Each structure stands twice: as structure tokens, then as C-alpha cells.
Image (cartoon, rainbow, N blue to C red; front, side, top):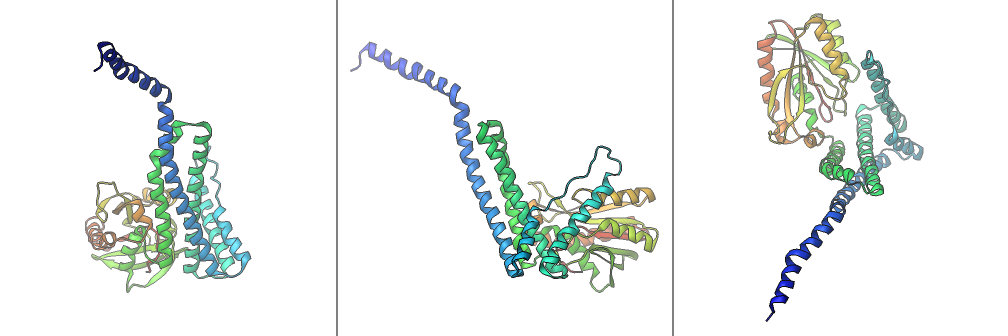
Length: 366
């Protein structure tokens, strides 16, 4: 049996000395323990990202190997992974949009020219698929390089601040990586993607109508809905294409004169609590990206007092660039019902409404 002195020693050891040592260790090494723990999680996620990037590059290499047997052509296609565009000077923001439009048109044409020359083909479907593969593989590669860069800095300077930021964003980065890989799968199958809900909604309305090219890579058809003239506009499919929608609106003004309303149909990034496939109605121009096309359409509309309306279909980022989910495809009927309602309420009888299906037309004909 322990004596009184021994009990005092035990008490001091368990309740004073050991906690004091623990507090001292935590004071000195708490950040290091946190760094080691978070570093393991980030490195695990980084290895998964590297696997996604390697899979994307492998899919791209397999595609170009099947597309051409000429090694110089394959090398030319691989060089697309490093193609870049330098942002124009914006010290004086006046006139920046025309500069951006010119730059992005040149960038797009360069991609298509390289693909067409390497494959010795002018087939828009083949060129669109090749450009899509290259852009998805390049996106995975740059995503990997950016994370790798910050991981190197984190380890080089033992920066807990940088590591915490990587730890916070890695789940989102992995979602993006899986999305790009899913887009390549959709390209392989020629399947529509979630972002194509706008062109799909408009393309179905074009069935049986006389189609014509209204702008580069952009198709149109004049029809009647609810006793109103409706000019349906979408990028040309079924190639992976975005079209030139602002040029199409400008051309429509020249051909038909007065426009009563411009209605855009597009996908909308939903909140986590929202359900995919739900539709929303609003005002404005629903076109994403850098904002070049939206700016040009808004400018012309404001000059002439043309009302702007938008119909949106909610979906997640992953759903937007992977094969179209059933819930999203089934929203077409709701989109058409909303469109007819907008035409009845906002467009005068015999007026002209320009209805634009915004998005990637992969797998969506007209």
C-alpha cells in the first residue's frame, strides 16, 4: 500500500507535472503537429489529382494516336497543351472588350487551325472533338501544376498558412479534375453535356424549320411561337462548339430590323441546397465566360431599348461539363413552357423575339 508521501508524488506527477509537460509541448510543437497532419491529407489528395491528370493526358495521347499515324502531326497536337493567350493591357479599361474579343477569336481559330492541319481534316465534328480533348487535358495539366507549385512552396518554407489554404480547396480541386475527365468521356461518346441544355432546348424547337448560318459556327431558324416571330439561335452542333452569339444578334438586327426581346436560355450553377433540373426565370443576358458576348449584347440592347430576359436551368459544376444527367434533360419541357409564357407576356403579337440557346453543343444537332 502506498504511503502518504507516495500518494503526493503520484498526484503531482499525474495532475501537475504531466499536464505541464503536455502544455509546454503543445505550445512549442502544436503548429508542427497540425502541419504534419494536414500535410498528409493534402499529399494524399495531390496524389489523387496526379492520377486524374495522368489519366487525362493518357486519354489525349490515345486519341491522337488513333487519329493520325504521322508522328509530326501527333507532336503538333501535343503542343496544344501549352498553347496560351496573353491578356491584353487594361491600364485604360476603355475599349478592353473589343481587344478581348479579338484575342479570344484568334485563340479559338489557332486551336482549330492546328487541329485541322495536323489531322488534315475540315470536319467540324473531328476538329471540335480534338480541341475539346486538348482543352480538357490542358486544364488538368495546369490544375496539377498550380497545386504542385504551392505544395512545393509549402514544404520549402514550412508554411502552415499556405498548407491550410491547400487543405481547404483540395476537395473542390479534385471535383474540378474529375469534371474535366468526365468531359473527355462525354467527348469520346459524343454525348451531350449539362452545359448543352440551352442549345438542346432551342435545337428541339428548330426541328422542321429552315436553318441557316447567321454567324461563324452559329445556326439560326425563323419560326412562329404563340403568334410571335421567333428567331432561334444556337451554336452549330453536334461538334463541341460555343458559337458567336453576339455576332448572331448583330446580324439579326441587320436582317430583320427591330427586335422586340432577346431571351437567353442557359445552365446556372446551383447552390448545394438546390435541386438539379429546376428552372428559374429572370432578366438580363445569361451568358458566362469572360463576359465579351454578354457585354456586346447588353450594349446593343441598351442603345435600342430591347428588353432582355433569361431562363436558367440549375445544375452543379460537375453536371455542367459531364454527360447530361436525366434530371437536367427532363427540364426541357419546363424551359419550353416558360419560354412560351415569356413570349405571351413580354413580346407583342407579330413582334420578333431572338431566343438564344447558350452553351456547348457537343452531341446537340439543330
